[in-house]
Length: 92
Image (cartoon, rainbow, N blue to C red; front, side, top):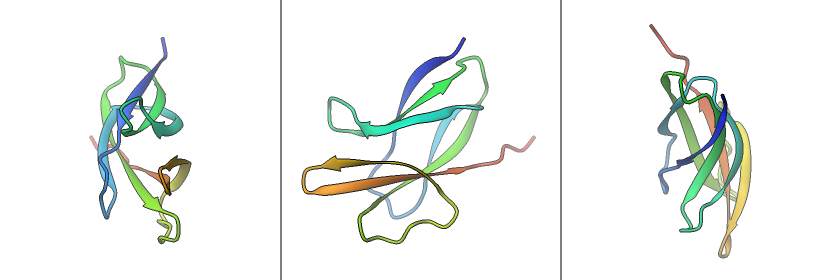
């Protein structure tokens, strides 16, 4: 059975940050939770093993990561943040 889970994205960071999510998680939304924390929401099977995936948040005008998949953008005060995901291939 699939469920929608929320994952906080540590921010700010100059590089990709690792977040552990269930294998085959599908990110559906990037936004702020009620506390204003930047998060992604993903459809997951909670029974799957956790794998590392990486996210990077950049501001408008910053260099886009060449190895990331665009997830979405969110307005926060005078800034617009853009989220990219890089899949980490599990080993073993």
